[in-house]
Image (cartoon, rainbow, N blue to C red; front, side, top):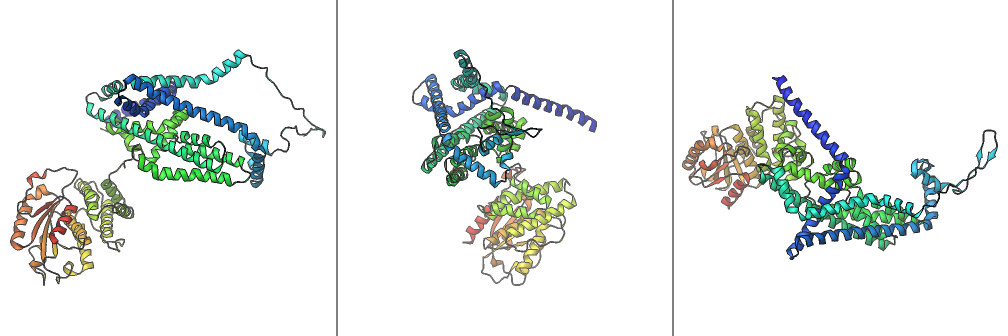
Length: 622
């Protein structure tokens, strides 16, 4: 059997590896073609809302598309002109600051005891140029025979280029970017003109027989990308304006250049804004004889980035991308390796497309799990996983974090109870070892006691099984009785002030009953519990039936406990005719049982959650 399994698994693994290698090779070797096309498609997501707005104003499809592309072209040309003009102005002004730069480099070299001057490469040559005594003169050299000679400096001048050669050189340098830009804008125009047709073709190609899922995926990807691009564009524009205004007020030259560079470079995740900050700080250090302007410049970038990243971005588009922070970093590394700087800028939207595809296409599901912002495990699964590891402290920390905005009843409904059902499934399948069973027992006891206000939850308990045999519900009940006294409290209480909870069926129901009692006690309701085998016993001394206001019958398997629940409701009606009867049904959320057949006409109220049961008890006690 193992040989047949291996024979089926190996070809699939080899096919997957070959397919992955083929895709990577196509991405890498076809980047000259894929990059312009990808840029055109992403520009289309940015311009599409503007084009749709123009069409709603009554303009035709062609006029709207051409207008949108023209606006983008003018905007990019304006940004390029600003950068070129500001860089030229900065280059012309740099010789004025040569003495300041040389003085600061010498000071830093002296502070580092010559370490700065030992740097190799272009940076080392530049530092040596500023720190040498006479950079324009040749230094004497001692020969092997002891004589000293001064070398003669020789300058090599190339012959002046002819007009045609100069023109060819200029064209050769500017043609590649112009070629890419031309391809981008041509493809962009046709993508916008045939936007609906391309969408339908893609749905037909990828959807096949499941048009609904593919349509949802395409629409989701388009909406997310449009929101992401527009939001990021507006945020980066606002950040650039803030940097421009701040640097202008501080008196730093070429403030418009650094504001523009900040807005552009901020499209590179995490590091782009700091590249602009580093360059602006260097210029500030070169301009100012002191260090105050450089520190103020760096502080401005730091303050603006903190405000934008921590307050504006999370509210504006913090949850529109659907990517985890780690996936953004990993995708930036991967796409920059594949496509260089363009891949670095496009890394987030490219990964977003893959994650959205993984949400609806089963073969790509791994991408959503690895890179999506949604947790890989649900909260009940995470609870049960931590319980199997015996990590009670992390479970309690997570529970208290959840309960900062939710109640204990909501936590038990949404996390604790589903996790207990998962544990019960594994118990029935005999998938839990005794050691894991003990860890689950200790962890759940610790969580329940910690959340119900027991300060001694951390103490070691007796070894018992949470899932079988001993019964954790009775163990928790015994612990509560030791804290509150015999009979779970005094009987010297007002009439109609006690809520009596009774679990039906297994020991698992007893645990659910104990959880309800603790939730009610957290709400200052005198809740007490009885086990099925205690119902035939004589009432405790001093106990009066009039003390009980509500009797809650609890079942965790309503379909199988339906007849017993009906019989017990009738019995409670005979014994405590004055008390209200509530039924609390807590089936497994993973089975999706049909409870339409579970009808209890004699019950005053039927609840399907702890939260509803607590609310009903509070209303009935008024």
